[in-house]
Length: 420
Ligand SMILES: C[S@@+](CC[C@H](N)C(=O)[O-])C[C@H]1O[C@@H](n2cnc3c(N)ncnc32)[C@H](O)[C@@H]1O
Image (cartoon, rainbow, N blue to C red; front, side, top):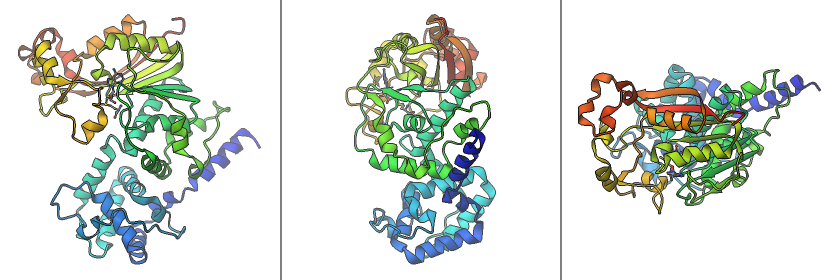
């Protein structure tokens, strides 16, 4: 069998994912599936749908109140005929979310018809439903989010011709989902450092991630890359239903508590290192970039999404630059010592999160100082210059250029020089 034929065969088996068919069924058929599901297995169907809706604001009439207490119903569907029945809460939400993104008009029509078909359900309007699904996808501990980070970072690496074989994540926070995706996608080694360890059992999370990946055929980017004839040595992951994501996650060399400015890895351990929403929080940015340079192999790539905005409740994105250092330090709390992303998400974090307040120009200076070659500087969020009032900022921020202050979220991709 030629390599091309093997690729085709592998792709064929991947595309057999039954969930794909759900997207193609059309409005009446999907409504019928929902009706059938509710008549044959009402407890389970209601629990799944209401779980999907659980994030609605309190008191919203669209809640399916009579089924909420049954959200953890042990009745699992037994028929293998309907993939949807096997998917559970996350899978159903994933189908809907993916569908809304890829075919918005058809999806909206069909989904609202489905909800109208649910016996005793209070009709839910399209806008509310879409809002619910979007919020589910945004949750930092959701499979959607992990997969999004993976896709984004893997995409950055691939754009620069890097295969991300030995990958490091700084500050993964509430899950190792993105790194798990890297391993499932063929990376040989994955490691992470976080100042605050993960808490709790993540078994259910990996189940959800697996279902989500099965639904969205999660490795689309990677597989597109793999099917080009220029990369004949690529290997395919096993079929999705055979991947044990929890076992893959257990392979991650996760060090916590461990600090970004003194990472417990030998020199040149990785060819790709990334972080998302972390660098703005590190106390020692200088030491962090120095360490990055040390643990990356020569020619290694690094990508960081940095959120330079005020993290508190204000529309003024530059509000954090209004306090002198000692006042700012006194009013903020750092990650670590029991304060992690989990306590932030569950609301038990008391106070405002510390940011080091570096601006884009400061980060670029740091990367240059440690010899990095800047490959991409992508502003992800900017504010209009007429909304910037430097006179309200304290030194040194009031001396920064308008262009510098305008960038409040950025993604930086840099390379450690091959000879460095
Ligand atoms: C805002 S959370 C982002 C988590 C995750 N990357 C995400 O996108 O959801 C910041 C994370 O960085 C970690 N962190 C903060 N300072 C750190 C440091 N100096 N070294 C390692 N991890 C750090 C925190 O514990 C937390 O998990």
